[in-house]
Image (cartoon, rainbow, N blue to C red; front, side):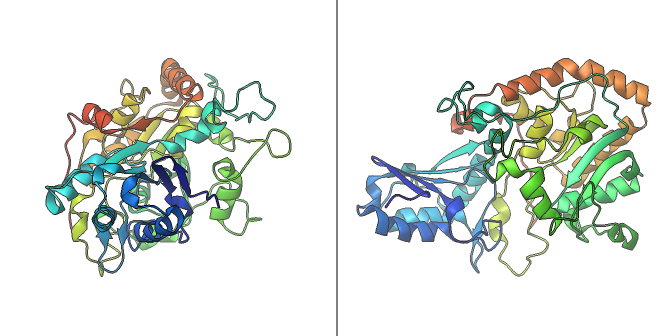
Length: 417
């Protein structure tokens, strides 16, 4: 019987771990998909596993997953899988969306398995898939002239946008860096200058910094949430970002860009990316063994960036270091001619966030006329980015050869454990 999660093509096996039966693929106490698929492969394949090239694909996420009570990093379990079945690690590939995964793996392997062959790693920018019609429609299998070609809305770049607010910043999951961002927006008196949402409360941010009682009582902070949905997450997943998770078509359920009003009414986007380059779990899962976090290196570019490229919007990033460098490598332009983007090379997470918010504060002090003029100067850059994305035929997939090119001058900060 054919399976959606295990695809066999000759001597190659592709496993999509998103289909595993437990939804927890997070940093801590993740479902052990290595052990699960080891059992599934033995029963499904019927041949020795060392006769195959095996790829484990987790293209939606960048998580550095840890399994079980011992909190063992998934690299360890992949190598144990190879030991058990006499597989050369070079016949294994792990694919996800972490554009620093090679450094993550190098540090772990150097400490734990220095003399063994390495597994192969790939980084795929799968979240970009939903913002170009070509990638969304699986071009070239479908062509623009086909009747089943799905059209995706985007916002036209308009020099006459009203831009009544300085910025927008939309947050769903209360990750530590987002809570610290909220704290700083409050302290800089910037909340009322933006279209802002923080949809779920949490009382501490990066490095354990806490919110005051007044700050915490402001949360959750919604924007445009309609309470005819069960909760804000249901509203986002089934309406606002629905095309990322469910089928759509041009007639019964056409794609709608729910961000147009936000884009038109703000000068820039403060992008609170999913990944900030520090382990999300360290300060609240202290009863787990945290020793394997020493190798943590993570960078992740998601729909939070790509949808604003699609809609022609300037951005500041609250994200892992070297996000702008990564975007340059992918062919996009960022906004260093107008904004101070040196924050992107600051390794200390609090200092990096301080620098982003300080730059936002400077921009907010400009007059509306000055921001409009700045936006008009940016239009060629915005048009380049929009067209580069909209015309992208394939989602970029990076290998170690790419890593050796784009990370040459990068530095890495040790994780505080």
